[in-house]
Length: 167
Image 1 (spheres, one colour):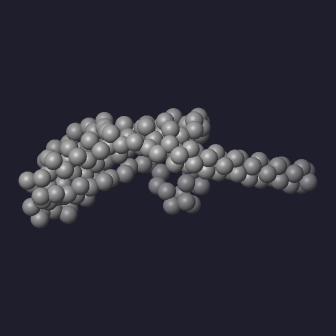
Image 2 (cartoon, helix red, strand yellow):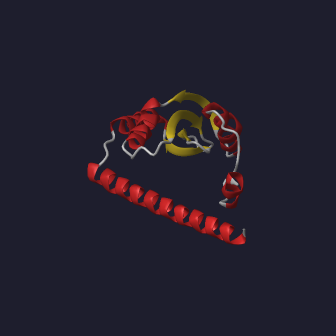
């Protein structure tokens, strides 16, 4: 049933891939098809750390979450340099393992590429969250979880009652 629900929502089902596999099988062929030339890749724990800090600021719902970040450098066919950051998210709860990939691109003149890349990484490592925003968003999440739980409890009760009437 879970697989049908995922497919009906337009999601793809696939075995989890490592961030390196995602680079090799999806990102690199796509970028090269657009004229990019791959230079190097390296872990970006500072970027992953920003997302981890946000995850830890959220209420604990029993889901185990992980984030990985990989920086990839490219030469574009316009003569610029590009940093494509891959973020791999993974969530595991009792019923399902969910993972996805997010990419962000920073492109600059080769003379400023190192400075731009360093600024991007520095901003990720030193970003701060507004505590009032975190509190507000956590309240929204808690409210949505409560509404969802109430909906499914009612749906289950109605289903059980309908089943009893048929028996």
